[in-house]
Image 1 (spheres, one colour):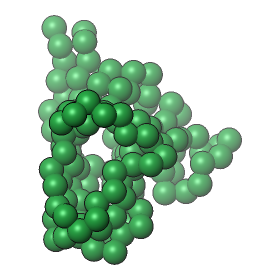
Image 2 (tube, one colour; image 1 turned 45 degrees about the horizontal axis):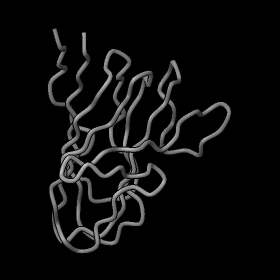
Image 3 (cartoon, rainbow, N blue to C red; image 1 turned 90 degrees about the vertical axis):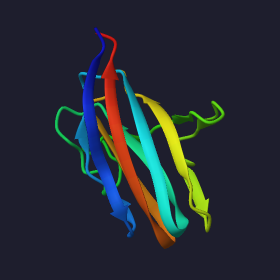
Length: 131
């Protein structure tokens, strides 16, 4: 039977640069993410993952003792892979996107808004396992 964790909020109308709320995901293989922007959004959002036993500091630089990286997501609209280092850029037009992240083996997930000059982001996740 497929396990479902319910909806979790990473960002709720976040209108500043920085990270959202990290979530523990070791029991799950796939995440569905709903990303929405508002107020003529102009920013980039990137998705972060880690295999560390304890939650890393996703707001700090990656290092040997703060192990995390940007991860790829897949756009449900057209099946395109979105490179983790590139992320999704909004340029004044608001949108709603449904994305998938393969988190098989990861223990933590988060997201970061960078290069923001306008607007806000809301990001929710639903976690699934195939067990």
